[in-house]
Image (cartoon, rainbow, N blue to C red; front, side, top):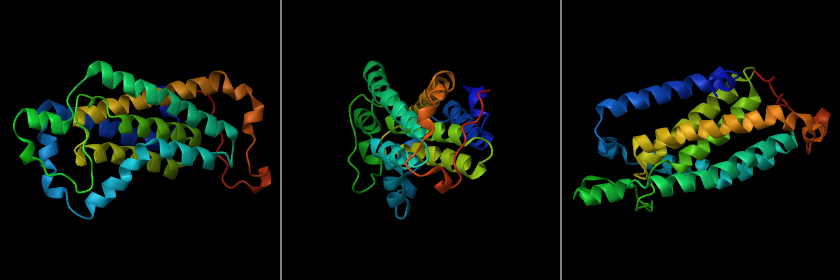
Length: 231
Protein backbone atom coordinates (compact mmCIF):
# COMPACT_ATOMS: atom_id res chain seq x y z
CA UNK A 1 0.00 0.00 0.00
CA UNK A 2 2.75 2.43 0.96
CA UNK A 3 4.58 1.78 -2.30
CA UNK A 4 1.46 2.53 -4.30
CA UNK A 5 0.72 5.84 -2.56
CA UNK A 6 4.25 7.09 -3.05
CA UNK A 7 3.20 7.52 -6.68
CA UNK A 8 1.58 10.70 -5.29
CA UNK A 9 3.67 11.94 -2.33
CA UNK A 10 1.61 15.14 -2.26
CA UNK A 11 -1.22 12.99 -0.94
CA UNK A 12 0.70 10.44 1.06
CA UNK A 13 2.92 12.80 3.11
CA UNK A 14 0.08 14.93 4.63
CA UNK A 15 -1.91 11.76 5.30
CA UNK A 16 1.09 10.11 6.96
CA UNK A 17 1.60 13.17 9.16
CA UNK A 18 -2.08 13.13 10.14
CA UNK A 19 -1.91 9.44 11.08
CA UNK A 20 1.33 9.83 13.05
CA UNK A 21 0.00 12.82 15.01
CA UNK A 22 -3.27 11.02 15.62
CA UNK A 23 -1.67 7.84 16.96
CA UNK A 24 0.70 9.90 19.10
CA UNK A 25 -2.30 11.67 20.66
CA UNK A 26 -3.87 8.31 21.45
CA UNK A 27 -0.90 7.56 23.70
CA UNK A 28 -1.38 10.69 25.83
CA UNK A 29 -5.03 11.76 25.51
CA UNK A 30 -7.57 9.73 27.51
CA UNK A 31 -10.47 8.28 25.56
CA UNK A 32 -13.17 10.90 25.03
CA UNK A 33 -11.14 13.95 26.03
CA UNK A 34 -10.77 14.93 22.36
CA UNK A 35 -14.55 15.36 22.17
CA UNK A 36 -14.71 17.65 25.21
CA UNK A 37 -11.61 19.57 24.12
CA UNK A 38 -13.45 20.77 21.00
CA UNK A 39 -16.40 22.19 22.99
CA UNK A 40 -15.23 25.85 22.79
CA UNK A 41 -14.81 25.56 19.01
CA UNK A 42 -18.36 24.32 18.35
CA UNK A 43 -19.65 27.67 17.14
CA UNK A 44 -20.07 29.45 13.81
CA UNK A 45 -18.56 29.39 11.26
CA UNK A 46 -16.97 26.03 12.18
CA UNK A 47 -20.33 24.41 12.89
CA UNK A 48 -21.55 25.04 9.36
CA UNK A 49 -18.18 24.26 7.81
CA UNK A 50 -17.92 20.81 9.36
CA UNK A 51 -21.61 20.00 8.82
CA UNK A 52 -21.01 20.43 5.09
CA UNK A 53 -17.54 18.89 5.06
CA UNK A 54 -18.80 15.62 6.50
CA UNK A 55 -21.01 15.10 3.40
CA UNK A 56 -17.83 14.46 1.40
CA UNK A 57 -17.62 11.11 3.16
CA UNK A 58 -21.08 9.98 2.05
CA UNK A 59 -22.36 8.02 -0.95
CA UNK A 60 -23.38 11.22 -2.74
CA UNK A 61 -19.71 12.19 -3.06
CA UNK A 62 -18.98 8.93 -4.89
CA UNK A 63 -21.92 9.50 -7.22
CA UNK A 64 -21.08 13.12 -8.06
CA UNK A 65 -17.35 12.57 -8.54
CA UNK A 66 -17.99 9.34 -10.42
CA UNK A 67 -20.29 11.10 -12.89
CA UNK A 68 -17.78 13.93 -13.36
CA UNK A 69 -14.93 11.48 -13.91
CA UNK A 70 -16.85 9.85 -16.78
CA UNK A 71 -16.15 12.99 -18.80
CA UNK A 72 -12.50 11.90 -18.94
CA UNK A 73 -12.45 8.12 -18.70
CA UNK A 74 -14.97 5.45 -17.82
CA UNK A 75 -12.16 3.70 -15.97
CA UNK A 76 -12.11 6.45 -13.36
CA UNK A 77 -15.82 6.11 -12.66
CA UNK A 78 -15.49 2.33 -12.45
CA UNK A 79 -12.66 2.56 -9.91
CA UNK A 80 -14.57 5.03 -7.74
CA UNK A 81 -17.67 2.85 -7.89
CA UNK A 82 -15.61 -0.21 -6.98
CA UNK A 83 -14.16 1.58 -3.96
CA UNK A 84 -17.63 2.56 -2.80
CA UNK A 85 -18.98 -0.97 -3.25
CA UNK A 86 -16.16 -2.36 -1.12
CA UNK A 87 -16.33 0.30 1.59
CA UNK A 88 -20.06 0.21 2.29
CA UNK A 89 -20.45 -3.46 3.35
CA UNK A 90 -16.98 -3.61 4.91
CA UNK A 91 -17.73 -0.62 7.15
CA UNK A 92 -21.06 -2.11 8.19
CA UNK A 93 -19.57 -5.50 9.03
CA UNK A 94 -16.69 -4.00 11.01
CA UNK A 95 -19.02 -1.79 13.04
CA UNK A 96 -21.32 -4.73 13.74
CA UNK A 97 -18.54 -7.10 14.79
CA UNK A 98 -16.43 -4.68 16.84
CA UNK A 99 -19.34 -2.91 18.55
CA UNK A 100 -17.89 0.07 20.43
CA UNK A 101 -19.97 2.89 21.94
CA UNK A 102 -20.64 6.03 19.98
CA UNK A 103 -19.50 9.20 21.80
CA UNK A 104 -22.96 10.25 22.99
CA UNK A 105 -23.62 6.71 24.29
CA UNK A 106 -20.23 6.62 25.99
CA UNK A 107 -20.76 9.93 27.79
CA UNK A 108 -24.32 8.98 28.76
CA UNK A 109 -23.07 5.73 30.29
CA UNK A 110 -20.54 7.54 32.47
CA UNK A 111 -23.06 10.24 33.44
CA UNK A 112 -21.25 13.02 31.60
CA UNK A 113 -23.57 13.66 28.67
CA UNK A 114 -24.07 17.28 29.71
CA UNK A 115 -20.32 17.87 29.45
CA UNK A 116 -20.48 17.68 25.66
CA UNK A 117 -21.50 20.66 23.49
CA UNK A 118 -23.61 19.49 20.56
CA UNK A 119 -23.58 21.16 17.16
CA UNK A 120 -27.11 22.47 16.42
CA UNK A 121 -28.93 20.65 13.66
CA UNK A 122 -26.87 17.47 13.95
CA UNK A 123 -28.63 14.22 14.80
CA UNK A 124 -26.26 12.18 16.93
CA UNK A 125 -25.84 8.48 16.23
CA UNK A 126 -25.97 6.34 19.33
CA UNK A 127 -25.45 2.68 20.07
CA UNK A 128 -22.38 0.56 19.47
CA UNK A 129 -21.40 1.41 15.90
CA UNK A 130 -18.49 3.73 16.53
CA UNK A 131 -15.45 1.86 15.18
CA UNK A 132 -14.43 2.45 12.47
CA UNK A 133 -15.75 5.77 11.18
CA UNK A 134 -17.57 4.96 7.94
CA UNK A 135 -17.41 8.55 6.69
CA UNK A 136 -13.66 8.66 7.24
CA UNK A 137 -13.19 5.28 5.60
CA UNK A 138 -15.19 6.46 2.59
CA UNK A 139 -13.29 9.75 2.33
CA UNK A 140 -9.83 8.17 2.45
CA UNK A 141 -10.91 5.44 0.04
CA UNK A 142 -12.52 7.86 -2.43
CA UNK A 143 -9.86 10.56 -2.39
CA UNK A 144 -7.08 7.99 -2.13
CA UNK A 145 -8.16 6.52 -5.46
CA UNK A 146 -8.35 9.99 -7.02
CA UNK A 147 -4.86 10.78 -5.73
CA UNK A 148 -3.50 7.58 -7.23
CA UNK A 149 -5.12 8.40 -10.56
CA UNK A 150 -3.68 11.92 -10.59
CA UNK A 151 -0.09 10.81 -9.91
CA UNK A 152 2.85 12.87 -8.72
CA UNK A 153 2.67 15.33 -11.61
CA UNK A 154 -0.42 17.02 -10.19
CA UNK A 155 0.54 18.17 -6.67
CA UNK A 156 -2.53 20.38 -6.17
CA UNK A 157 -4.89 17.43 -6.73
CA UNK A 158 -2.89 15.30 -4.30
CA UNK A 159 -2.90 17.99 -1.63
CA UNK A 160 -6.60 18.71 -2.13
CA UNK A 161 -7.43 15.02 -1.79
CA UNK A 162 -5.32 14.67 1.36
CA UNK A 163 -6.78 17.68 3.13
CA UNK A 164 -10.33 16.86 2.11
CA UNK A 165 -10.04 13.36 3.59
CA UNK A 166 -8.39 14.72 6.75
CA UNK A 167 -11.08 17.37 7.22
CA UNK A 168 -13.81 14.75 6.86
CA UNK A 169 -12.09 12.77 9.62
CA UNK A 170 -11.90 15.84 11.86
CA UNK A 171 -15.54 16.64 11.14
CA UNK A 172 -16.63 13.31 12.62
CA UNK A 173 -14.98 14.19 15.94
CA UNK A 174 -16.17 17.79 15.80
CA UNK A 175 -19.78 16.69 15.21
CA UNK A 176 -19.57 14.25 18.16
CA UNK A 177 -20.13 11.22 15.95
CA UNK A 178 -16.81 9.44 16.49
CA UNK A 179 -13.73 9.30 18.67
CA UNK A 180 -10.17 9.85 17.46
CA UNK A 181 -9.46 6.13 17.38
CA UNK A 182 -12.51 5.62 15.16
CA UNK A 183 -11.38 8.06 12.49
CA UNK A 184 -7.81 6.75 12.54
CA UNK A 185 -9.13 3.24 12.02
CA UNK A 186 -11.42 4.48 9.27
CA UNK A 187 -8.52 6.24 7.56
CA UNK A 188 -6.39 3.08 7.55
CA UNK A 189 -9.20 0.91 6.24
CA UNK A 190 -10.02 3.50 3.59
CA UNK A 191 -6.41 3.64 2.41
CA UNK A 192 -6.36 -0.15 2.30
CA UNK A 193 -9.44 -0.17 0.07
CA UNK A 194 -7.86 2.45 -2.21
CA UNK A 195 -4.73 0.30 -2.50
CA UNK A 196 -6.81 -2.80 -3.29
CA UNK A 197 -8.75 -0.95 -5.98
CA UNK A 198 -5.50 0.33 -7.46
CA UNK A 199 -4.07 -3.18 -7.51
CA UNK A 200 -7.18 -4.42 -9.35
CA UNK A 201 -6.71 -1.59 -11.83
CA UNK A 202 -3.04 -2.26 -12.51
CA UNK A 203 -3.39 -6.04 -12.70
CA UNK A 204 -6.59 -6.41 -14.71
CA UNK A 205 -8.57 -3.31 -15.67
CA UNK A 206 -5.77 -1.57 -17.56
CA UNK A 207 -6.01 -4.29 -20.19
CA UNK A 208 -9.55 -3.15 -21.07
CA UNK A 209 -8.71 -0.30 -23.43
CA UNK A 210 -12.39 0.47 -24.00
CA UNK A 211 -12.50 1.90 -20.47
CA UNK A 212 -10.11 4.67 -21.53
CA UNK A 213 -12.86 6.40 -23.47
CA UNK A 214 -14.90 9.19 -21.92
CA UNK A 215 -17.94 11.30 -22.62
CA UNK A 216 -15.82 14.21 -23.81
CA UNK A 217 -14.06 13.94 -27.17
CA UNK A 218 -10.35 13.28 -26.73
CA UNK A 219 -9.35 16.70 -28.09
CA UNK A 220 -11.83 18.41 -25.80
CA UNK A 221 -10.47 16.99 -22.58
CA UNK A 222 -8.70 19.40 -20.27
CA UNK A 223 -5.76 18.15 -18.21
CA UNK A 224 -6.67 14.49 -18.78
CA UNK A 225 -5.39 12.35 -15.96
CA UNK A 226 -2.92 9.74 -17.05
CA UNK A 227 -2.79 6.50 -15.16
CA UNK A 228 0.70 6.37 -13.61
CA UNK A 229 2.69 3.21 -14.26
CA UNK A 230 2.46 0.40 -11.80
CA UNK A 231 5.23 0.70 -9.16
